[in-house]
Image (cartoon, rainbow, N blue to C red; front, side):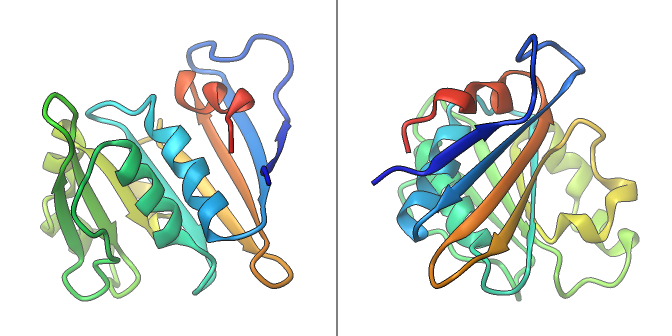
Amino acid sequence: MSAHIHSDTPAHPGQPGRPERRTFETDGPGQTARVGRQLATALEPGDTVLVAGDLGAGKTCFIQGICAGLGVGEPVTSPTFTLVNEYDGQPGRVPVAHFDLYRLDSPDAVLELGFDEYADTCVCLVEWGDRFPEIMPSDAITVHIEIGDGTRRMLEITGAGKAVAGLEGAAC
């Protein structure tokens, strides 16, 4: 079974600075993770992915897919209480910093975690990053997950450049 993919960006995909938007309708956690895994193929150090959605929408599942695509071999869990987890991918791949900002109450609290330093050297995956847009990178990829019937989810992924543009033919 495959996810339904919709492209909402006409003309010249992947053109620098031009936002791309893709939507995916998935039938369960496995498909949601596979969309994340596909996104991972184009991520590089300095990229930030902001993942938003209601509690239980599948934010961590999507991030688990990204981590799998980056070669992280250890279990990936939401850092709800630790606030940030660090993972190393396969040799030659990028380090990953996974943030959960749900419990934080100010942009300063995020910066105190060293967010800026991580953003320079890692792929930053940020659950609840929409809470503090004023300190997030302007070129961040945004993922919004909506809960559908049962295990169905609608994912909207937006960002400039090849990472989002490359999702158009994703085999999910």
